[in-house]
Length: 337
Image 1: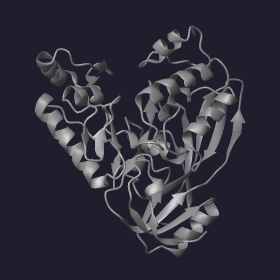
Image 2 (image 1 turned 90 degrees about the horizontal axis):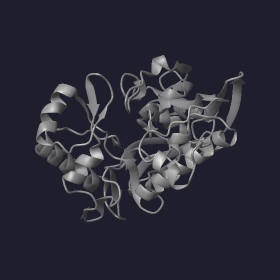
Image 3 (image 1 turned 180 degrees about the vertical axis):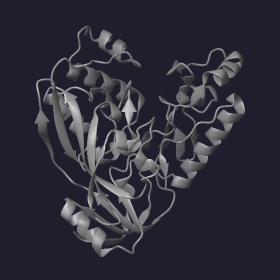
Image 4 (image 1 turned 45 degrees about the vertical axis):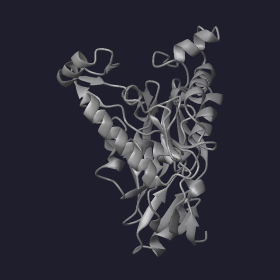
């Protein structure tokens, strides 16, 4: 456990942005984490997981703590459910595949999402009609101030669309060390109603899909639309899908009757940000080494040597254009550093 100086973070963020950390250390268990925090109380700190949901726009004048805790196990089960604990540093996709191999249901629709397990509750990640909150049981976190461990229940996490307590009132106060998921052991609730899953299954003549077949369908869809960060720097969906009051949406819809939308409650509508960006003419466009992916307008990409600031500037141009065109504000899902 050695603290390194002037450390390149290019391989520690999925955008592949070149940025330096003033100091960097990887921790592999809670003992190491506690020691580092205790010995560096006065230093500014930055907690780094899989680097999949952030855009680095500058060097980090801080001690970057890379949470690299590994391990997963079943901690409890009954006739219907299994409670699985994963350490924060486990790769999310590999963890999902492991649960499927155990025939445990609930995470299959979130296959191939980049990042590590420990950051999934922060963002309440989701895909194809499911979110972390649907299977989340609890998580353990170390309090940065006093080094004590605390368990957060689902209710205490205040989950919302791409939101949690860790992005708001508890921001920068805790480091998540492990997460517990409550997964189905039998009578799995297969969800193929969202997006292209049912079509992908139909193309493969699958009418009664298994967990593995749903996962494979999601992987195939994501691979057809989303670039592999190892080949083309990106952070998945850059923007949130805007949620509008029905009364506001109806006025906009009159002007743009072809606009796609999903009703999410009696009073709210969700509009696909990707559709808005594509209609505004950005899909597939390139501005130097920063660009918008050709297959998915929600994804901003680094073609090689784009700076974080160049990608941020592009995102602001998109936001301004969408607002001027449709009167809708789209928010970044990615954390801008």
